[in-house]
Amino acid sequence: MSSKMVRLHRVAKRYSSQRSALNDVSFDLHRGEFAYITGGNGAGKTTLLKLLFAMERATEGTILVNNRDLSIMPQGKVYQYRREVGFVFQDFKLLPDLTIYENVSLPLEIRKMTRQEVDYRVRGVLSLVGLGDRATDFPLTLSGGEQQRVAIARSIVGKPSLLLADEPTGNLDSRTARDILSLFREIHEMGTTVVIATHDEHLMEEFPARVLELHSGRVVRDKNSQER
Image (cartoon, rainbow, N blue to C red; front, side):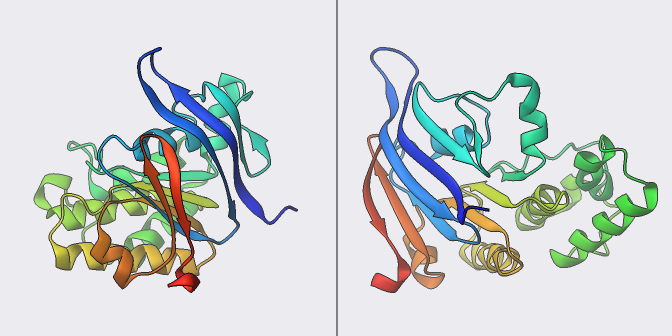
């Protein structure tokens, strides 16, 4: 099996003839790599993650993830693909009327797993993110940092090989943000390839990794932590 988890070749995304979100983007990510996608507002960070999650399709170029070509993937195969990829949203996207346990178990409910397997996985990831005692609580009773931990637990409960996160610390105070980055590091050390979109320079310095910087939809810097 190829050591390349992600391969983008000359990818472009245009929303109209006047507006290009990404232009001629090419890079590879190895299995087990940890990388940041950075850049200012409007640089194309979120668009790039949406393409990797097959939420949108590239206008030009090729995107391979786990040897699957997203540029020609039939719509009917997208859900199956997303079983291999987790996505953490900045605004959590938790369902307020469901308990923490129910929110985290959602991705497993449609996989025909046994109740015992679902329970084992949900309780395992809640313990991992430090919320093992909050399973029966509801999202709005939790702090922002705790809600983000729930969102992370939901994104990894299906054991994805690739985890994407869009500004996961953007709405958090600095101490909580560091705790969340530590959690992503722990998940990475368990073998998951992690890609985080962020503009937080302090966190990238404290938790060094590969940095892919976008500007006006183009990669203008690709720097490995070893080069620091």
